Image 1 (tube, rainbow, N blue to C red):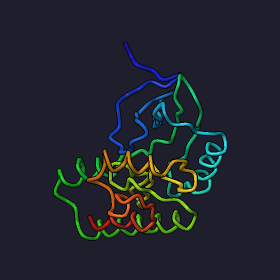
Image 2 (cartoon, rainbow, N blue to C red):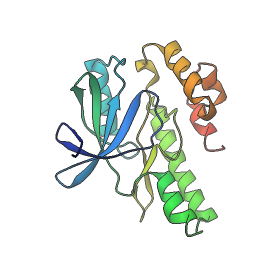
Image 3 (tube, helix red, strand yellow):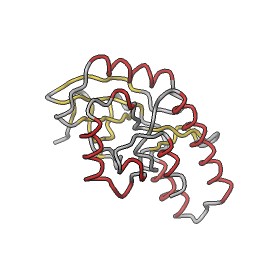
Image 4 (cartoon, rainbow, N blue to C red):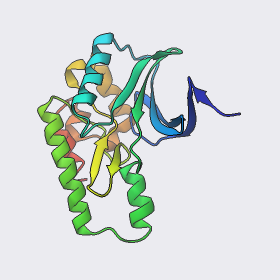
Length: 195
């Protein structure tokens, strides 16, 4: 028996780091998407839903586009684009490390693309927070095009104390020092480039 979420066939769970959601690779009409299911204790209002949709439309050069953001069966969910080359971590692991072909120029191209994305996102009030290669997907290889699956908008986080408590208790190993001290800073996104 196959598993479905609404009309989307669930293919596999994705290894995206986010303490408030679970992600799946899903398919509908022979096209792949990312399904993000939020935890049940999250209360997301219509203003946030519209703001997030608007942000991904305006900044789709650096963010996965959200096609649907709604409520179903006790959870909020999103249907996002699935960039054809999958996650950056998967690509590096399966294509580059396996063939022993990573070179300095390619790594510099990745870093340049990520810095450009961070600068534009930060200038629009958006932080990443869970900055790692599992949360970054590849749209194109011919001209490297990387997009973030997860992002955060600090003013829209209702209970920042609870938010950072959950992070510190479950994800301390991947947080920047200021995040561990309950400080949301755009500078913390750059911490991961040096890790």
